[in-house]
Amino acid sequence: MTEAALILLFPFVPLFAAVAALALHSLVRRDISIAALRGSAAAQTAVGLALIVRFLGVAGEVRRPISLWNYAIEFAFDSSRTPFLMAYLCPLLFSLSRLRQLTSPSLRLAMLFYLGGCSGLLVTGDVFNFFVFYELMIMAAYVLVAARGRFYASVKYMLLGAISSCFLLAGIIAFYATGADLGIPFAPEFYARPVAHQAWVYTLFATAFFIKSAFFPVHSWVATCHAASVPMISAFLGSYTVFTGIYGLYQRVLRPAAVTGFVPIFDWLETLALLTMLVPSAAVFLEKDFKRCIAGSTVVTMGFVGLLLARGYPKAATFYVALHAVYKSLLFHLTDDLVIAGGIVQGRGRTLAALAVAAWMASGFFPAVIWFLKYDLIEAHAGLRAAALISSAFVAGGFLKFRYARHDAAPRTALPVAGLMALFMVAASFPWYRPVAAWKVMLELSTLATIVWLAERWRRQEGGWRWTWEGRLFPNLNVELLMPLLLFVSGLAFVVARRL
Amino acid sequence: MNLLIIALATYGLITTDHLIRKIMCLAIIESMIILAFLGVGYAEGGLAPLLSPGEQIPMVDPMPQALMLTAIVIGVCFNALALAFIVNLHRQTGRLNASEFHD
Image 1: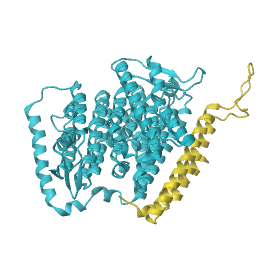
Image 2: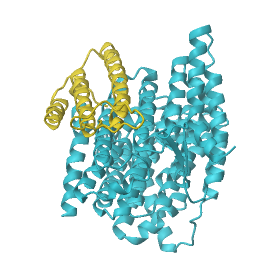
Image 3: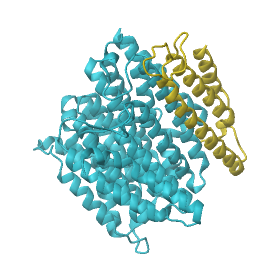
Image 4: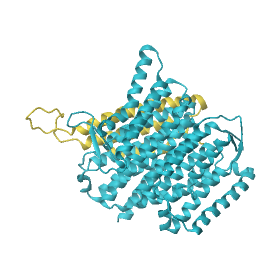
């Protein structure tokens, strides 16, 4: 099968499966949703792996119109999209054994539409279809988040998601008004426009993607949705959905901004990324809910990835995305194998071992792969090294403050072993290992030792568990809905001020 | 005019405490954005974009119309889903004011 055929087939597999399941359910009252979900996941894994093999390290983009009409919608794929494809396939594979968490046929159909939206995003060739597939994905995600009857989480996600979509749509208008077509990469007409017009387009797009990828201060939906969802959905939200925002930011803002040398957008991203590393990491340290802790560490990761992108390390950033998908989906799926109550996390020995490895990866201390990923970045600037150490320490402390114990009655599944194998396979393909000075290793390990000591003291102080920083920053939903507007206004002011 | 209505609806979104009103404000913002996009494709004296071979007539840009039709459908789905969830939230908690909800 040719690359063009694979690109065309990829997003339609789950959508065809959904339509087939829906038709059979309506016509003959037969539920094939589980079989459709399994078949779709298997087919997409095969097609996705074939795409990765054919495009990894290969320059150039392949485009494929969906019909022979001159103005037909085009799908496209290139090697820069492969890490995001890996980030999509990982939670998909892990969830195969956990499909029963979706308890009704309608939820499984919603899952198929969600997968259709996710995979369409990966191959879309223009900005408007990016919007359409994103809406398909997020609309299904709203339903899936509400699967356990936690409607507040879904409503909050919807409100912030709709605000983000309004910014994206406004960005598309501002972009179209330049006279350029909506294709990717951007047309020369866009670059010929005055800088002020470009600034509007970049700021509108960037605000939309900052909300979607949960940058500070528009990150509060992540913890709420993760805590409300079943682990399978949390795994998708935490390892893929938030990264679609990063994907959009990279493809629609940073790549064109790099072409024109539009520096202010990179400065704005760096400022936000630093805040996203530091503020939510402190919240992770203080958080008492285990799943919210994992969700908080996802937000911190967005900060790291944003910083790598802002400082000009796109390859490291996208590898980070793929790696993060493995350990984050492993962490979320493992919560299903644990018994968590009153700050005590209980599970089987191998479950706890897998949890420890994944949590180490999440915190990013030496010698985790992530530490090597950010090595060049933190070498370049002492302040960035301090920020990276502080946020890593807070995330590690967040996990360490819980008490862990073996519990032989906890669920026994093959997931910990499979997850660790996947993690080591991805880590083994990592090309940036290097010799490291002893003092740097000592600095990392002494910071970790300090945080272990602090976490132990924190655990003994009962009062600490009742205080959350995030609760004070965002006292209610009204304040949270104000944040996107503040982000846009401050971003526009920042970009204009830097440009002048 | 579009910008003024968007500003008013944004003000409403921020200041109103009622969840259903917030959804209405979002719907207004979205409609105004759609109108603005249609405005981008408008041509003075332009006709509907139906081409006949060899005919050269001024016509409006068909692209925004095609795209915004999709955006309208997405908007309707969003509103229906949001209202359904808010009704369920009200049944569950007996509340509809955003200031009463927090994690």
